[in-house]
Image (tube, rainbow, N blue to C red; front, top):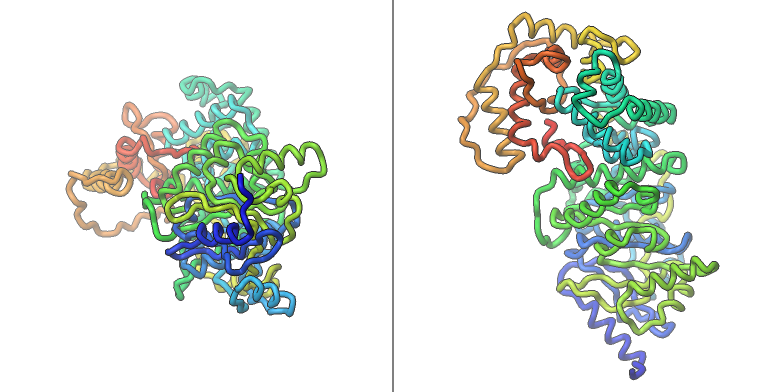
Length: 577
């Protein structure tokens, strides 16, 4: 094989990265030890939903790389989600100031640099930090993700899925941890014995294990992550008034103490988007780009069901216009089935201090296309802010491998001030919507309202009292059913969920009623019960505000049962309204 000249190598890179559509500018190629700003390295914006990997040893510049890419995505009108592990990414909200060293670097790259701010929304898991609280209900989180947090084995995970099935069937909303505990305690009580037998496969011993794990979660303070108001993942798709994409920055100050919660919660966000977004096909630019930092936390000790669900999500969410970039130290942190879906590669330097490191280095080199570089040497000698890159071009073919000196971000490469973060959060349009936790009627109150306290504690607060009043009112009124309301609910399920025209009549206008039932999200659909609703499902239907709601949602369940739970066992908000 003939040895190519430096000019030929440069020409190969120039030709490989000559793209027609809008692009993310990554930097300039380094060929034979020299920086070549006439050979820019780019990533087509339309290929961002083909997913990617940003990898490299600690301190090689991975966070700065995703910072720089996020800025350009925002400028192009693409919303971005970032997990802020170290607090550095909050600097996106503060314009950087040019120094002599910085301007010399940007000039050498051919980068026209100017300090800028970007539209940032600060989020925090359950309010654990400075940001808009992000919460999820137990129902929407689903049994597979919850099993992941509780470190359940596959048998226990299957049993938890049966508990969710029972709650769905009996119209018991699982909003927070106390709701799930109440349902499990009911199933293991004398009154729930028959229900437990009907489930099959759920032993009292397994139920006890799950209960103990729930207590552990509460002891760790995780109960505040589960509840209402639930965060609507559609908020991640917003753009600013000037057309730039909003950068949603999730603060994770306690990552080291709750790594499993962090990684699993991010998968909930993705799963919820996956279930709600329509098919989009190939777009000029993605609807959202998701950066999952510390990606190894997703996969360490994961069950087969969890890994299968991640693989399915990564494979299919591309067609819905969402790109996912995994950020981790080495590609071996990501399972092969997932790694095979990551078309865009930004590989920072690797270190080979141990035999295991050397093995990982060889494995990484083997995943790159044939190139003009000695990649084993290049990956161990690359400097900070340099990376070996190959992406998909506009035709879907891999670009030439290029050692690249990366562009500099235009916002601060570090944290913004606490005052700026606090003022941004206070001015956010999301704060009135998600800022205050609420405790509405759900499984805990309903089981207690049925007359037997199976939870180990009496219901407290106005929600519990209202549950009793609603049930009494309904039984006094006889629970009359309105056929037009049932038709309206069936029509909604067919058109909004199943996506097909409905043959049912359009609902007639109705005057608002004055029932003293607390306003809340519509409960989950319930399956119809034999004999008109005896047992816990029938007696507790009154807590919803009447047999009408129960029957209407039962019909909705019949129409949309195949869509009840997604790949993670999650429940889409579109189906929970």
